[in-house]
Image 1 (tube, rainbow, N blue to C red):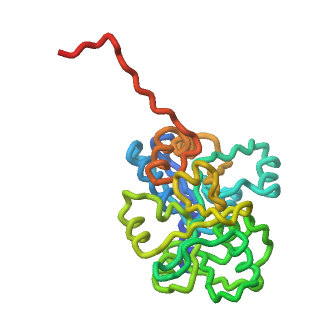
Image 2: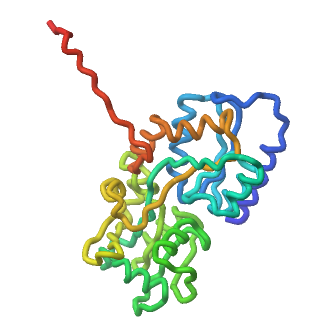
Image 3: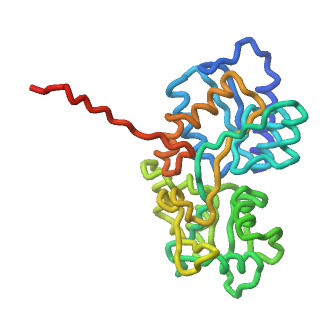
Length: 298
């Protein structure tokens, strides 16, 4: 994993140090994006969709932890950071000090899904029961599996549970969301935490393959421990799933291919990509049907 990150950073440096002999335009040029690894499926889907319309545009995506993605963008090592949170006050100060408006682009509503092995007896889990697991106050020997030790998935869960540390929790860090899924498929006594977009696209063969080997758990809200919700389009749209999160694009640039790609992701075509992936578009576009009453058919 560390070797891959080093190679990715070297590639970023090479791209940013190369001589620029071509003007950056919405339909051409090169941009670099640092994205949280838990958002890889939707990031790749947006890249494919954009290139289908603008084949001359080169979009390089590097998958790193969320805090690293923001750091790379703020240091001008990449053009865009695709993450699941807004900038911290310290990060926003970089925009302020450079007299750049802080205008994060919200792309989609996602969630952190809890998964387990199909052989596990667990079908649902209560919010308070999960919190007890993170505090180490349970007798159940269940391993909690995350993609990384400081991942956005872990940060979201801890923030939602109101916890600042997990000293006594039985937590295991894998090397990415795919590895979490593979670990759960082999270990019945574990609960994994992954980005919902890894398993939400019913038309994607990899997403279906992942789902066939796992079980998605229902999670209760902190206000009602008797009703459980799974992260699907219905519960995400109704804002009932307790571990929802926003997908956001951050940049310090406001022109060229960088701006065009962000607009694409948040405009109609990009939002249809989000919807097709089984997620909730942040901007809902109404479908209009125009009927011509004067038309006649023979």
